[in-house]
Amino acid sequence: MPAILVSALLCSCNGNLDYDTSKGINTEMTLFQEEISVPIGSIGPLTIGSALNRLNTVPGIGSMVSQLIQVGEDGYLRMDDKGSILRINAYELEKLAADPSKPFTWNAGYQFASVGGMVGALAMLGLKTVNQHLTITASNPFFEKVPMKCKASISCRAADYTTSYTAPIPELSSYQLESANAKQKLATIDIPANITDIVSTVTLEDLTFDLPKKMTSTIDKTSNNLLLGLSYEYYCRVAVGEKLNLPIISGPIKGVDLPLGQFRLKKCRVTVELVNTLPLSVIVKDVKVLKPVETEGAEAEPDSNISITPGEIKIEGGSEEKPATSRLTLEFEAAEGTIPDIKGLRADITIAGQPGMNAVPLTTKQGLYVKSSSAKLSGGITIPQQLLQK
Image (cartoon, rainbow, N blue to C red):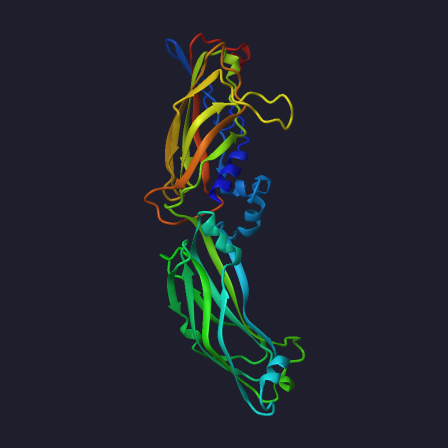
C-alpha cells in the first residue's frame, strides 16, 4: 500500500518547475563570478489525499486499495468491516424444541467470526491498524425478551499469524436481549492503543439462549425480521510502523519539468528543500534523465549523455506534528553539448518506516511539500532575452 501511495504521489506531481511569481518568489538573479542562482518555482503539495484520487490509475492492486481504504470525516484513512457471528431463522429454532409449547433453552455451543475481511490485507501491504473499535449487536425477532449467556473473547493476529492479544468481553457473559429489536448494541470494545495487530476473531463459547414458548406466535410480524442473531461492526485507522520495508520500486518520476535548455549549460546544480509529513523514509538511487518520447504511449529511454550525481538521495520521514526537512542537491552534467529541458526522470526507490517512530495514523493532509527550490547555473552561461524581460 505505501508503495502504491508513493507511486500515486509521484504520478500526481504535475506542477511546472517554471518561473512562478504567484507565490511571492523572488525572480531576481544573483550574480557570482562564474555562477548565477535563479529560482525555479515550487510544486506541490503532493498529499495522500491527491494520491488516493489517482489510485485507480496505478496498475495492479491500486483500484482494490482505493475501494478498501476510506477517508473519515476527520481526514484520517480508515477501513471498515462488518459481518455475522450467528444467524438462525425463528421457524428453524422452533423445530429444535422438543416441545414448542414450553420455554426452550437453545445451546448454540461454540460460535466465532473472523473479523476484518479484506482489512487483513493491510499486513500484507506493510501497514498497521490503530484505534481499533469493535461493536457487537444482536437481533431478536420475538416480542419476548431473550436471556443470553456465553464466554466471549476477542483476539488479535500478528503478521506471522500467531495470536498476539486476547481479551474477554465481560458484557456478553450474561445479557437480556430486548424484545422485537432488529439491531441492539450489546458491547463496545476499544483495543488498547499499543496493539497494532489487526483484530482477527470474536469467539463465543457455551452460548445459550432462553427462548419463549410458542416462539413463532411471538414473532413481531410488522418488522419482517425472522432472525435471531449476533453481528459485529469493525473500524480502524490505517497507520505506518517503523518496521515497514518495501521492495525497490523502479520506474519513471512523472510531472518533472526543468526548463534548463534555454541556458545552454554544460553543468547545473538543482537544490530542493523538501518537507515530508509522511512517516516514511525514502531512498532514491540510480537517478537518470529520460529522453523525450516521440510517440504517444511509448516508454521513455534514459539519456546516457546526461549524468546525475550524487548516486543516492535520502528523504527523512516525519509527521504532521514533527515534519522532516531534507535539503537535496542534484548536479546535472552533459557529456557532450549542453543540458536540454528535462521532462522526465527515473529512479530506484526504496520505502521504509522512519526509524524511531511508532505506528503513525495516515491522514489526507500528509505528503511531500517543496518548501523552496533553485538552480545554480555555471559554465558558459547564456541568459535568454525573454528571461531578462521578466
